[in-house]
Amino acid sequence: MEDKIKELSQQIEEFKIEGKETLEKFRIQFLGSKNVLKDLFAEIRNVAADKRKEVGQSINSLKTQAQNKFDSLSDSSEEAEEQKSDIDLTLPGEGFKLGSRHPLSLVNEEIIEIFSKIGFNVSEGPEVEDDWHNFTGLNLPDEHPARDMQDTFFIEKDPDWLLRTHTSSVQMRVMEAKELPIRTITPGRVYRNEAISARAHCFFHQVEGIYIDKKVSFADLKQTIEYFAKEMFGEHAKIRLRPSYFPFTEPSAEVDVSCSLCNTKGCNVCKYTGWLEILGCGMIDPNVLKNAGIDPNEYSGFAFGMGIERMAMLKYEVKDLRMWSENDIRFLDQFKATW
Ligand code: PHE
Image (cartoon, rainbow, N blue to C red):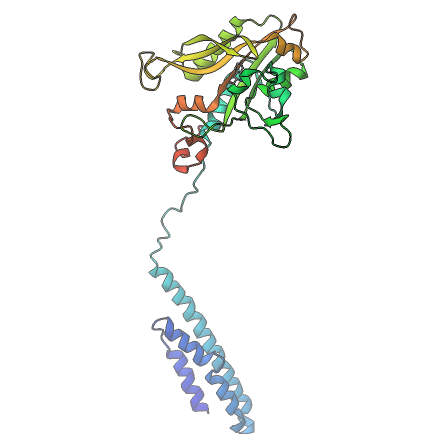
């Protein structure tokens, strides 16, 4: 018995690892559920009674020896595995991939910033709007043919409710609040029932603005738009106004900015006209002021509205409107914010 214990102790001592399997064999032999030490314990009853205690202790220390050997070998084998896996701990860690701001947000903020410098604050309103704020209050009563200009998504249960087709609805709400004078811009998402293509989408974003005070004139409007164009497109930007029609403004105009790519010489971005259309505007129709409870004999105002996607397309020369809402990381990654 004692010889056997000595032999096993030596075996443990001399055991060398040659691959993971040999370590597993060692574990089964000395520490597994049917290990050799159990056999030894079983044989203890054949040992002379006065030696049993001593033999028992020797078997126990054999067990500890096996356990220690196993622990130290499995540690070092893990280390060896790690070293084999070619990890170079001196390499710099993987950087976190930072997101970028959406180009439409960047342009939106730029527009807000430009107008805030001349005293415009920001107003917001609901995207699900009622007929009054989106249409009727803005001089577009039922059956008005200009309602067709704005393919509207109506709420099925109650056609008095709809997805706003422009953010002029927010202007209506601000006017009704009547904290005069008003100088505010209204950025937000709008919806129109259009087939999705490179040039049209069923939703897009606008920034509209109004200024209402005593004696606001068309000259104020023109000056404000010119200031905006220069801030947005550079000091050399020129604007031109073309007569237009909007039900809520009279007179109305569409504004073009000189094409900064060809300097009005004509290129494929401006379709060889030298000019790019950027916004619609006009003097707020007296009827609209009246609808909001503002006396048109005392107050006058101007309004303007532009598409953020359109601004972004001009700024970044993106030709397909769908890019803005597809969330393709390869596209979005190119617009690193400088904030
Ligand atoms: N609401 C108009 C549109 O969506 C834009 C506009 C706003 C025009 C204010 C004139 C004045 O097309």
